[in-house]
Image 1 (cartoon, rainbow, N blue to C red):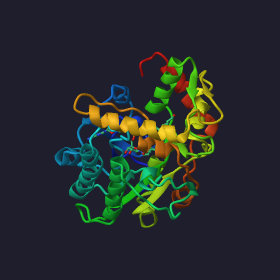
Image 2: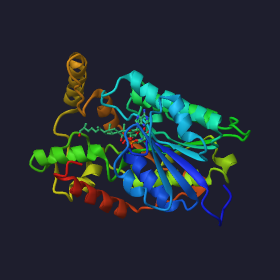
Image 3: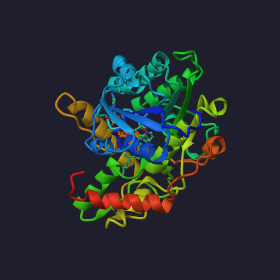
Image 4: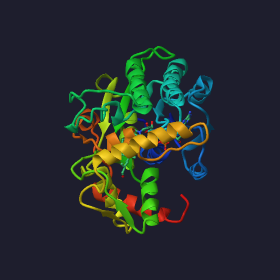
Length: 369
Ligand SMILES: NC(=O)C1=CN([C@@H]2O[C@H](COP(=O)(O)OP(=O)(O)OC[C@H]3O[C@@H](n4cnc5c(N)ncnc54)[C@H](O)[C@@H]3O)[C@@H](O)[C@H]2O)C=CC1
Ligand SMILES: C[C@@H](CO)CCC[C@@H](C)[C@H]1CC[C@H]2[C@@H]3[C@H](O)CC4=CC(=O)CC[C@]4(C)[C@H]3CC[C@]12C
């Protein structure tokens, strides 16, 4: 993408552009990509906030579509230079069937790749996940690991299985010839647990705390560390990768990058308290209030109930054997690969990320957001 002093000329497409992360990517592109002529936002469900973006200098085109439908993806992608593929089914609670998760995350990604080839879109940035690596079901800690740290990857759950397969497809597609004969350049970003404005699980914990008269109860030992990353920095890394892929295709093509920033390493619950604390909640207990074996029993009971009730209703509690294992296993990333390869530095400091998230949590109170 040669630097241009003339009219902006690039056409980008963001799949899943109305989701939690997708919205931040869309807004970040409009702020930080001066060469943008048109931004296509492709999502199964279009959001009303898209309307307000249509009055700016960049043409914003909302496309209601389904990544599992190859023809819809190809039609939306015709004439685009870059696709940021963020659409996905994020489900570790049993809300969707394994088949649906596979269709959206794996078949959907295959459709995006084939559409690149068919339409001549040369640059593909894929939102993968740390879950592609772990935590594994054996509970092995991944402590301050980087992209090259050896780790026993063992997947059973449909979500990480689907993200791992989709990431593999994206990386294998690097170098394929697209329409016009140029090689496809692909790259995958692996965020750790994302937080920030729009994070639904954070909002749910907040509401639960309000219901429990300002209290949440510790279930996970404070010593279990989780890597978390602010959504604005994840969006920024996507924008930067998309911008640099052409100039650094040889270095970045076919690569994976953990998505990181300077958010502190803490347990899942202690990290959430960084935001929920200033909103008036308190975490009760310096140690877990229930013994671990009891949590395992409750999680197993939840899984059993989910299975038994499935013909009648969807029972999808937060606690299940998988979420308990993830929450209870240290998984932290320490790397500078993105900085070395394409000059990534977090755009938002920890203080700013924290302040923005607190403001958002406060604004959700009683707002029905
Ligand atoms: N939330 C997190 O902590 C993390 C998320 N990720 C990945 O980031 C991506 C975005 O996740 P979130 O923003 O958290 O989820 P989200 O559920 O808020 O956003 C996903 C978007 O994809 C859209 N979508 C789902 N199925 C679709 C389909 N068949 N066709 C078209 N659009 C479809 C949804 O409507 C939604 O707008 C996902 O690929 C996820 O795997 C990776 C690491 C961590
Ligand atoms: C035991 C409960 C007591 O309070 C806490 C349960 C918390 C869990 C619901 C979350 C703990 C870790 C989260 C996951 C992690 O951040 C990694 C993820 C990456 C993704 O790509 C998708 C989301 C998730 C799997 C995330 C989901 C929620 C947790 C399991």
